[in-house]
Length: 280
Figure 1 (tube, rainbow, N blue to C red):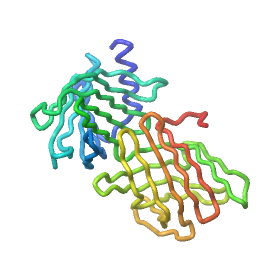
Figure 2: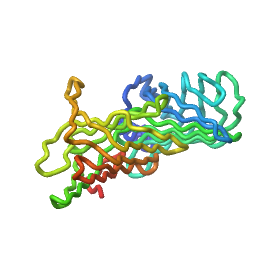
Figure 3: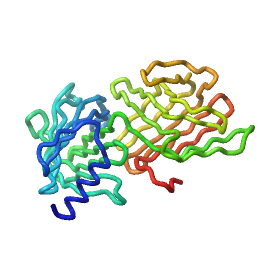
Figure 4: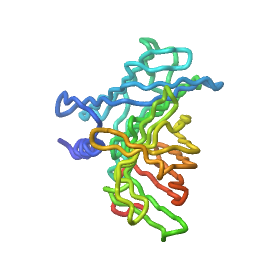
């Protein structure tokens, strides 16, 4: 195996998709769910949740993306397959990229949408992002479900010195988008917002989602978080009421998140796909 192929395969192992089939040592197919935003020039949009499969051909450094079902403007449900994408590694070992300029996706067995420019990122901690721009102005943006992030979380309040956590075992975030409902749940693994606050698994439910081309915005004026255990049993926590939650994310830069907890703690979190020992 040549050096380039070894680097690509090592990067893909780091991405660790939620499910995979190994066809041979030179090819692999990954399957995982996506939240999709599709828009036409002029503003009409369609939202859907769907499975996707991605086939990687290491021998030829090529890839293929297949949507068995997807909602597109003026099409309630169809399929889309994109072949001939070039495979490369992202900088600093952050994952892989598939890209193509002027490729022709097959949509419902036809090519009516014409050629497209495609970029797909497979980054770090299980995250995938697809951006597809057709020549006629139609675009498709897809985000993996869930989006999993490491964080640098800083908490300020009138009653304590600023409190910051940036270790891999504290304040890890998962954003689970339901594109059809335009809502998301935000799970925080080992949430800890103060020195004496015991770590807990915390969930913010039914947060409003705005999906745009290449970005996601989350908003909630007020919500009651729940804690959950290994059996996913939920327990409401009104004493930790969350207010003024705002978040914004892009494939290139992860996500920024702010909210108030219990009317006392102001939480600011920088969320990243890939953990490093020197998160800022």
